[in-house]
Amino acid sequence: MALITKNPRDFWLLHGQWQSAGRAHSGILLIYEDNIKGKDMEPSDIVRALANLLASGQPIASEIHVLNHWRSP
Image 1 (cartoon, helix red, strand yellow):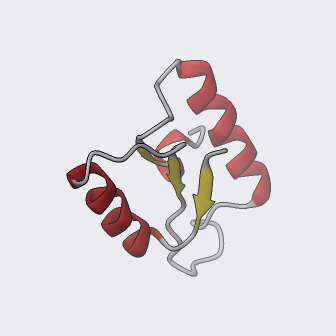
Image 2: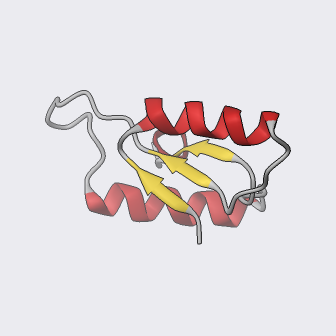
């Protein structure tokens, strides 16, 4: 299972450590928050971003994706 987190800093570091060690993971999906109403992702935005990422065919395993980038305009 891929991991979804709103703690991007720590998981970027872990991803880098795993890559350096040649270790695979199921995928890390990051959500950035600015604590600004209307800018942060709502649950429906997260679902839409996940659907867009999955529909793109991009690999998820051993990759890191920022879900904010996959949100619909």
